Every structure is written in structure tokens, then in C-alpha cells.
Image (tube, rainbow over all chains, first blue to last red; front, side):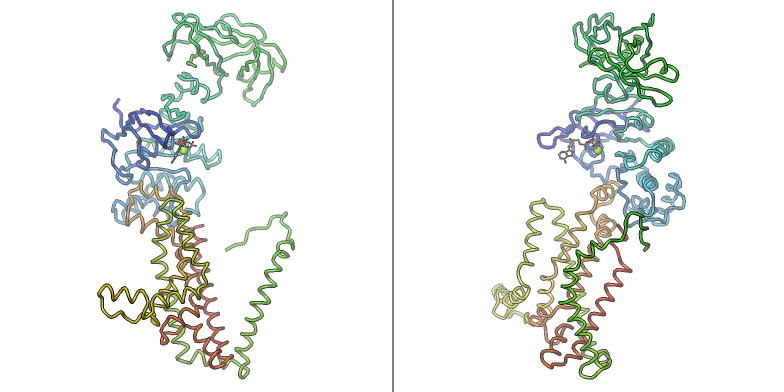
Length: 356
Length: 282
Ligand SMILES: Nc1ncnc2c1ncn2[C@@H]1O[C@H](COP(=O)(O)OP(=O)(O)OP(=O)(O)O)[C@@H](O)[C@H]1O
Ligand SMILES: [Mg+2]
């Protein structure tokens, strides 16, 4: 596939501080890409460089093969939705949506008609005459989205657009944004630090940490095949066990907690015998029983805490000093109580290796 | 406007009102009592009744002076806006240190009595002052009459009142969310269109507040127009002052003062009801 938006070797220095450290990224036309990462990891900075509000210290940004270097934000044809929506308080919803068309010299009557169409698309038919302060948070969000899309931008950038909404509205808007994005086929970059949001909305997730892209991939790949310790730890609940590779060819490692372990082959970094690594085991891929299960890999643990969620339960146990988290579903839970000695078991293909 | 519903927990309490008593007493003794006296004089001297009001409102001089007062106040407010808006804008664009320095320079003029500032203008604009000298030295010939003209009084009043305008506009400008400007730019706005469609409307509450404040303060200006302005273009306060000081006409003077006060209050009320822009954008 050809890349539509390309970032190559993008660096951003603020004085001596490196906000972005050699970021490379390819986004395909029509793709929905999410930037996910902790606070201060460089997500907004990257977005602002694409939008033209910040200059990269080094590196290049291209859209459809054209370099954006030297182009003012006004000339980039990029739609942006800011976290607090940034609607003009002195303009009605329809006038807000008309604004980018007005700047493109579209006549008022035609522009307002197109604005009304766009408002209808985002589910705000008949709200055009209202001022932003007369709209709810979710409705303002929709106006901002309509305004960023009405001029048919080459790219749509959204910087934590749902951060201010409550949980129900958030989920509703996630579905809405996804629906509209699919319908218009606009290439979209969505910034969030909510991983479930990233999982449910994205074609691809880009995980940022400390100005670096840690991993970019499809949501389930990011979840099940983390490539760095940071990604394994950051995405979802994880057990990370220190281990030493004993036989790289046979994919075997020795862990103080789990003992002798085989690990899955997929997505492996190149490993050498004796290398220090971390083993990744997702809590829901482990099982608990009283006795070791034949045919699975087993390790002993003492049950410490059981947190019940109704449909599932999280069992936190310990082996020596190391906590082990296991997620159980339904009836599996009842046989155990706190303080019990138990066996945790898993299969070889559930174990992934990341370098330390 | 609707009032917020009272919750069960916020019982009315006397405390906040008690804290206000010193100020209330002060205002009562030094403002309301004298004001009441003026109101009383306006209907009792020299004879009881509303004759003073009728005379003032039908007399051509008072009407002419009132019109001139409004015109001058509007002109001063407009000039303050012309001077203040770019300066306030500059303050938001420059480094914080420079903005503070400019703000300090502006507020510094508050530290000098405005009588002193008025005299300073008399010196500057006088027949033998530096401005006249510069005009001659630069070869523009005989300097024009500057003192005792509308030009001189307007200039001095703008100088005195501009800080109110600047501070009102500046405080609104600093509160503008930068994301609004960025978002406008991302949609293609720049230069003049950015100013006209986004920046000016967003700063309109500051302009309106500053303009009304300057206008209303200027309505009551006394010393500056009397000392610097043309005697043919009197302002209301000057006329009232002359009534009382020169003609000892306490009744007619008081009536004029009450009319000026009433007009000022009406303007403020209309502004508050119709153009409560700060509430509109709030
Ligand atoms: N103008 C600036 N001057 C100096 N440092 C800056 C500036 N802007 C951003 N930074 C730094 O760059 C780093 C990346 O910031 P950025 O805003 O991109 O983070 P982010 O991933 O968007 O975080 P968040 O999730 O909190 O929004 C941060 O450490 C921040 O302090
Ligand atoms: Mg950010």
C-alpha cells in the first residue's frame, strides 16, 4: 500500500529537551489511526507539526507525496478538532460550520446550506441557529466535527476530543465519529490516552512514549503481540516476568517465578542465549486450579485478593515476592478463596517475549 | 435572566452583609448624604418646585453644553480605542516581561495626579512649549493655536483615560483561548479576515466595557476641559461649576447635576440590559 501521510525522521527540540525523537510514520488514505500514550509523550506535538503550528526541528512531513514544508496552517487543508472544541462563541452552530467555507470565499447562502447538510450528517439537524453556549458538550463536539469536515480536508486531526465528556456520551461519540469517518473516508488521526477508546475505534494504533513511537499496529496485534516492555505494560492488564533466554533456537527461557518456560514464536525480536528478557502473560490467558494441569505449563501461587466484577473476577496472587494477576470468568471463581495455595497454568502460545 | 434555584443548605445569613457595613457607612456619609442635599437643593432653591429642571431643559445653553459633552465623551472614547486596541494587542504578542513593563508604564500615569498631568499638557502645548518650538524648528512656520482648543482637551483626556480602555481590552485579550485562533487559522483565516471575523468579535466585550467606562467617566470631566479646552466648547461639569462658583446659582446648578447623573445612569442601564456582551459570551 502507498502511504498518504508520511512522517520521516521527525524531531522536535524545545531547547535541550527532546519532545520528539526521530518519529517515522506512514498512514494510508482513509485510515483511522490513533495516537496512544501517556501524558507528555509527544502526541499533541506530532499533531501540531502535521497541522503546521509547530515546526519540526528536523525531518519531513508529506501528504500525498507533497512536502508540507513551508506551508502555513492556512494552506494545508487539514481539519482539526480541539479538546475543548474551540467553537466561536459569537457565531451560531451553522455560522461556525460555514466559517471554513467563508474563508474559501463560498457565498453565504450556499455555504450555510452546506453547513446545514453537514450538521445533519453529524446528527444536529435543526440546531444550526443555536449559539455554542446553548448546546450540550456532546452537541458542541458534533459541531466541531462538522466544522472540521465541511471543507473536505485532506486530513482530520482530533486531539483528545472526547476527554471532557462523561462515559456514556463518550461511547456514543466514539461510535458516531467512527461512522462519520467511514462514510466520508477521510484520513484521520485521533489522539487519546484512553486505551479502550483506541482499541475500539482504530484501524491502527501508534503507541508513543517519551517522544518515541514504541509500536504501530492493528489494535489486537498491539494487545496480543506487544514488542516492547512499555507497550506490554501500558496496554491492558499484564503480567511481566523477568527471565533469561536459555535456548533461543528452541524458544526456551528460565524465569525465577514461572520456572522453565517455552514462548511463542510470533513477532519475536532476535534473541541470543543468555539474554535478559521479560515474559508477557495476559491475565485472561491464564487459568487457576488446585493442582497442576497436565499438558499446560504450571506454576504455584498463593491467592491473596479476589476482586469480583460480577461477570468476571480478578485474582491477585503471589509467587515469592512477585504478584501474579489472573482473570477468571463465571463459575471458575467459586472454588477459590483468599489464602489458598493454587496452581496457575497457561499454554506456550500465550507467552510473548519483550526485550528488557 | 432567571435566578438560580436556592438549595436547601444555603440559608440566608447576615454575615456577608455585616462585612459590608464599614463601606456602606462611608458611602452613606460621604456620597449619599451630599447627593441627597444636591437633589434637595435642585427642587427647593431659590423657590420650591421643578422650575430649575424646566429652565435647564428648555434653555439653549444647557442643551448645547450637554450635546457637546456627549460628543466629546464619544470622541475621547473612540480615540482611546484607536490608541488602546493596538497597544493592548502588542502587549499580548510581546514577551511577558515586556508586557509587564508596558503595563507598568500605563499604570504609572495613575500615580500622578491628573491635575499635574493637565498642567503638563499646558506646558507642552503652550505658545512657548516644546511642541510649538519643534514645529517652528522643523520649518513648518508659525505654530497653530493648540492650547484652549478641543484638540488640547481631547488629547489630555485621551491620555488620562486611555489606561482604562487598555486594561479592559488587554484583560479580555489575554483570556482568549489560543485554540480559537489556531482553529480559525487551520480553517484558512489569516490577517484581515482573522481579525474581522474572529479576533475583533472575541474582544468586543473588552471594547464595549472600556468604551462605556471611558465615556461615562468623561461625561463628568471638569478640570481638564476647563483648563485646556476652548471656552466656546464647555462641558457639563464646567457649566455646573460656573453656575455654583460664579453665579452662586445653587438650585439651577444642582438641577443640571441631577440631569447629568440621570442621563449617565440611563446610559449604564441601557448598556447593561441591551449590550451585556460579557454575559453573552460567558
Ligand atoms: N512549547 C513548549 N516548550 C517546551 N516544552 C514543550 C512545549 N510544548 C510541549 N512541550 C513538552 O513536550 C512534551 C510533549 O508534549 P505533548 O503536548 O506533545 O504531550 P502529549 O503526548 O500531547 O501529552 P498529553 O496527553 O498530556 O496531552 C512534554 O514533555 C511537554 O512538556
Ligand atoms: Mg496532548
